[in-house]
Image 1: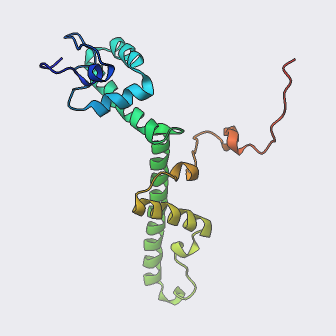
Image 2 (image 1 turned 90 degrees about the horizontal axis):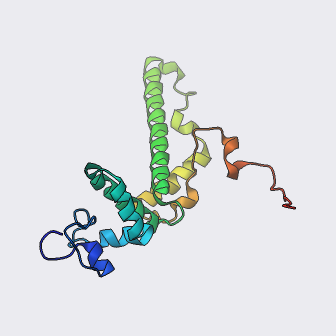
Image 3 (image 1 turned 90 degrees about the vertical axis):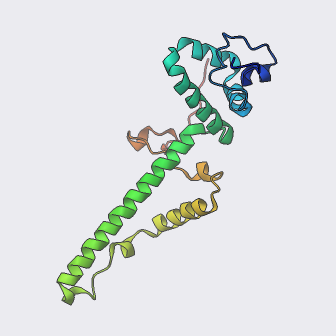
Length: 181
């Protein structure tokens, strides 16, 4: 306990904060929301056990991680921080595609400048983009501009590094009824 005021966890749990309080160094009394959200998602007892099992020098990082994960889970109860990671991976993929298109356009423009007789028949790579991709990109970029990410988990495709046949949701086989007798 730092000073005379109890830490945020002891305040929330309405107990006396001792010098040996495991929460005091990581949940100061001036930020009660931090412990409240971790307590809501993980529970004080579980957090206490996790912190006690870690070496002291790793506890600060663990608390930061717990706060991040708890905040993500409260924001998105279904996907939690996995939803945020998937969204960012999707953004990286889109940006890589945009970069590849821009590089191809630069190459096409250079080729058109070197061979002016072929200008009438050459299409730029951006003109060849699939319409479906363009619609998805517009949907996500309009969401970015509105800063409203609440609907994104519905539109995220959770790509896997393994083959797509291992994804349960993409199997084309209908579900079969099993008997437990």
